[in-house]
Length: 246
Length: 325
Ligand SMILES: Cc1cc2nc3c(=O)[nH]c(=O)nc-3n(C[C@H](O)[C@H](O)[C@H](O)COP(=O)(O)OP(=O)(O)OC[C@H]3O[C@@H](n4cnc5c(N)ncnc54)[C@H](O)[C@@H]3O)c2cc1C
Ligand SMILES: Nc1ncnc2c1ncn2[C@@H]1O[C@H](COP(=O)(O)O)[C@@H](O)[C@H]1O
Image 1 (cartoon, each protein chain N blue to C red):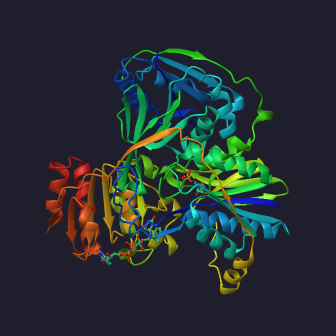
Image 2 (image 1 turned 180 degrees about the vertical axis):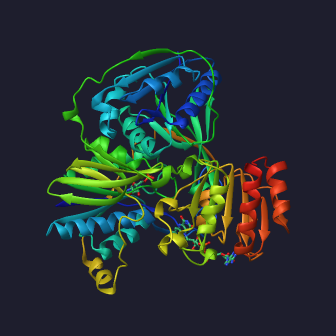
Image 3 (image 1 turned 180 degrees about the horizontal axis):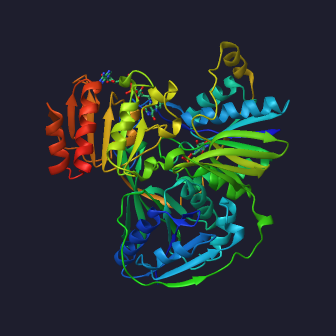
């Protein structure tokens, strides 16, 4: 099994967002950056799949700046075999330019299976996995909650509005992981030590031009001051008269 | 001329309401762009009822891709069938649903175009199409404009109202390929028990957190949701209670759960951690019930009661039921 897992370094989920001086990007001052939480499920599933297949190789790949090396080391410490850092210095990209740039490199790796997270929690795009699949001419299973593999056949369950779908396809394929797909392991000391010796290639790249140009990033308007009530009757009155939901 | 296409979503032949919202968004955008033609493309099978609904949605044209090849959803199959009809598209819109998230990025890649997902507003300025979308889990909004000849967006549900009226010209078209060319295909749809409405479509969401103390006691949340009447309210949950196994992950609201924006969101025994707020802070009205007056949930709540859920919620349930019937 030749497995690729795509990971991204993102602002942590408890980040207090401040807009940068350019008016269109996050001010990174004081922000903690982490491996995208959904990508932890992707890495874990890659490891489980490789181990169940009785062997193979997992390549973790990211497009970002040199800071992303840390997150690739985390993937290696969890159990990935090697890593590739596509370093564009953290240029302004959109889902289009990210997917086109990464696809060029993933093609050359000839994967049987590519794992991604369902969504990067910074841009909240949910685009990359299906875009990558299109560019690699592969099927994609998105937002997967359970995955089973039987030979070259994949079977996934995914939540849709009010129901759960069973989707199947054949390898090679792209799979995006939802929360609940597995329990991602924490890297242990042995893993962390081993990760230091695993190969990590740094390739400098220039990302293709984005298809969309960001003009502004703005904070949402503050919510109006709330009102506290002593009694259920007062709350009901407010729901009726002010909110008009009853 | 500006040609705006809406990809309408039908499941088991039933048109999903956000498809009608997307037609409204398309009509508004066409108007902003100084006029244009709006065509709804409807892939699936057994589409007579859905076609009829779309005919009266304000769209200029409806094209049904009705074929047994497309009876079961296939992301690559639908994208391939739709692409043949998008040769002259300026803009392509679709609901930001599970299907939209699976299909549109693939289609956008095939059209070599940009895509703004989960858009809450569409724009036409200085000859360019663009959109605004929430990023960082709704903690900020990003506005961007297309640099390509085709622009795509998926639209957040509940953000546009359906348009009623009109009389579209309706036609049929069949995909140019057979079922053997489909790759990822839905084999089965397991419906949720009890015909409950999905979180993303519910007008009211009643959510519970660790303050409910046990899965048995969590049932007061379900009772309150039921009190709003059939098909109105859905039950949500904080991650704490999902991780504890009291509730399924499909009910989790927040950064690593669902992002929802109902008319009314009632948070019971939920502290209001930033990751939970990320999933519900754009709800129209927020009600918090919590025994701790300093709980952060009160900072985003429009209305609140500081008190014990086990006293407040049963009384509220009774009062809601009395007002609904
Ligand atoms: C990467 C990441 C992602 C996350 N994603 C999510 C997510 O998607 N969704 C999510 O919800 N969380 C998420 N979290 C977790 C989040 O940080 C909180 O831990 C979680 O939301 C807390 O759940 P809670 O409010 O139910 O529990 P608690 O924080 O324990 O709050 C319980 C509340 O109940 C109140 N209470 C207790 N007894 C009563 C009573 N009898 N009557 C009334 N009130 C009572 C208490 O005052 C308290 O405010 C995430 C965390 C991380 C790190
Ligand atoms: N810059 C990147 N480098 C590598 N993988 C990425 C990158 N951006 C997104 N991905 C992958 O695509 C998934 C979905 O991201 P997105 O489409 O941006 O929401 C992420 O969870 C990652 O697996």
